[in-house]
Length: 93
Image (cartoon, rainbow, N blue to C red; front, side):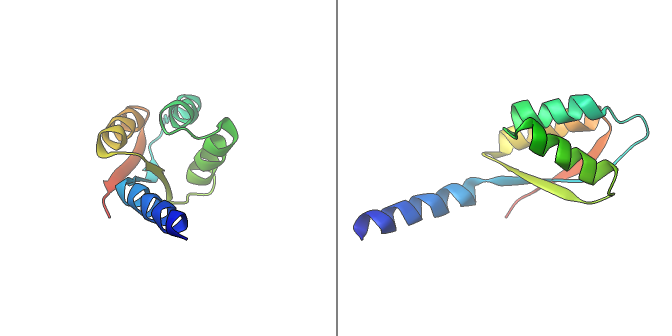
């Protein structure tokens, strides 16, 4: 029982440390393949999940979000995504 509580607390703390990046649009000339690669390499998404997210953003005109482990990583990913003509913002809980 004590181990379950400890694991639950650790999981809760870890989830609270996560930072959301909201991708809410894109510009003409967006670099789709490099964006998928960025999500795969920096946000630790599988290639399949990264492509699905890109498809939802571009083809479905959806607002999509990912969670990353810290603010610095979120800033780096967002900066690179913006260079690829993806619009987004960081959301702090």
